[in-house]
Image (cartoon, rainbow, N blue to C red; front, side):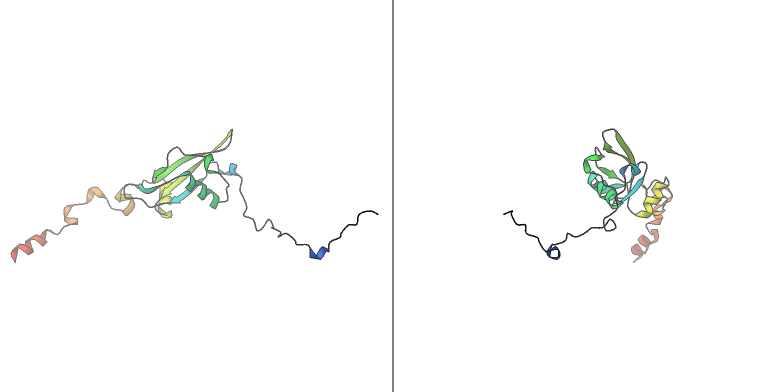
Length: 152
């Protein structure tokens, strides 16, 4: 007598959840990165020195937010970025494939736009619109204040 097969009830089978292509985040080809610019906003002092730094991990997170899948070891960054400004970064996608991107590190999106146009934001004039050379002591101190206190 041949072995009997057990036929399972098709309706009793558990179905695997189906993930549609629409529910997955679309990934963009890393080759499309060549020549692109990305903005990273960080806190910095008036001289442009960051209160921290931008590391390869931060660049990978920024690229992932834009839909690019890059590993941290593909980012050619010898030293972390420690100042605001435009920084060229090379990505090693494959043994013979490198692409260059621009990282725009700024205090705000508005400053990033100004930097992209070529403006330097490392002086009070650039940041606040104040010409440091035109400032006089009278702008900060009231010379009449000392005279009033001496007369009393």
